Image (cartoon, rainbow, N blue to C red):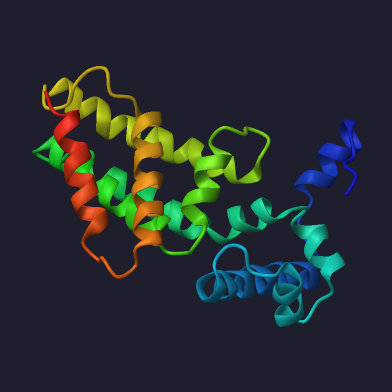
Length: 197
């Protein structure tokens, strides 16, 4: 997929989609969400296109690669996590608020098999469309972490980047052991002991 540059490219980038293109986009996102839930994030993109009733070329016109499609699928969960951080921002116990948000993050990362691994790899690759998810998550988490640090309940050397990687690692470990439903919570509890002052 070739990009356009200059003023013409800027106009093309903000031009709204035609109605049929918008329908195709929405069907692709819906079918990708269903395929990822059923088969994990490694689900066949050809199958996603077929289920949406379009050709693979249409899928790639909207989503040049798997991470771009994953980014579109996870926007709803991302918005929910950011909204949750706002709801917790004024909680009476800042450390508890941070922990609740991290727990929610682990739950979302564990929704689709392969998501935690993809998020971990994308966090080191700013060119990945999936790394766009980490920017608002990082900002949301930084606010909660800063409050907990200001309250003196979380060590000052803890960074939100480390916490995001830890939550993805916990979600990945839980994904590998689906029969142990309490594993993620135990690992988070162990992690939190190291965070506290």
